Image (cartoon, rainbow, N blue to C red):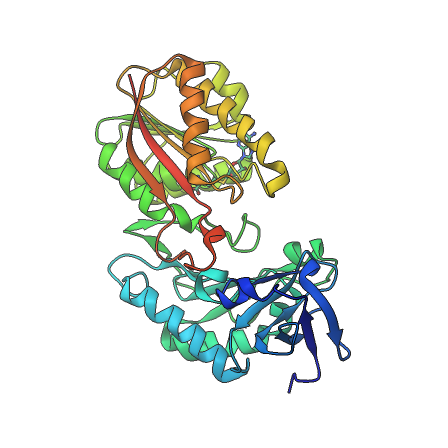
Length: 396
Ligand code: SAH
């Protein structure tokens, strides 16, 4: 089917693909055969002609091909069904779907699930799909079918939320329900906490699912404590801290819409305004005024480095907000601090936080090193997929 559309690599450029790394950079391509267009499925060959596998081609992008298979296996409906079924089965084994009190998880984590360019998040029988390449955009029907077959009664709606991402690739797309819709009695839950998810207008697919286990850790520390949740978005860490017995939680974000949802999420879980406050502010400005009133501070900023070239500036940003927070934190308090920048790895993040502590003149202990949860798996062949890292520090 795709034999006529093929990409041939320069000598030796097949090495990373033989190691099952799924990205072919544009500079690795020697020749393109057939009327290949952006979004096409192409056969990828080594310089001398050996077939390496199939992937989605993107013209003009630095990642020119995102590999889907690494042998002669063709990418047909059967392939999609088996990949998606495998991804769903893993989440079921983790008890993240139809498990006790949890109905929120990531179903497909791009390279981590062998589907480079595709994200699918799951909120109580509703799947939200994000296609990050034109090839995935073209595969939307096959993806829909795969989700319907794999999830059965556990699926009543699929929303395609790719317009903003595809616009960056100069591809027009409209966000829309592509299968069913959200049910009337729709109640997404994370370990028993109810969350209102704004799929249509919220950031990403509506919620930052990747912090589930880290929120759960905060719950263990929260009893009797006052908590400041900086970059709170819709109050994920705030609600979990309250459920863990925090006496007072303040959610801080620059987005009033996010704070409205944080407030209604606190209320929906039984916490009134006396115990949950909203602070609409710029994080850095607020931190300057001191955080000595709190026993626990959470810092979960948006990705400061969206690319490797922005790494240095991002590191400065992490250092600044962390040293600002550490300066005024009280003795014995805890800092939960995170980075979701792919370009800043574990080591670099730890070093940055250590230098922030030195700058703030504080002695800190590392109690926990945190990562993304198993429904955001990292392919062993694609270490770049490990993007979320965090530290829990005790400030002395
Ligand atoms: N911790 C959240 C996710 C944080 S997403 C959770 O668990 O759900 C990052 C948030 O930072 C967004 O809500 C965004 O509105 C907010 N934000 C971005 N820049 C900010 C700034 N300068 N000051 C305060 N909040 C900011």
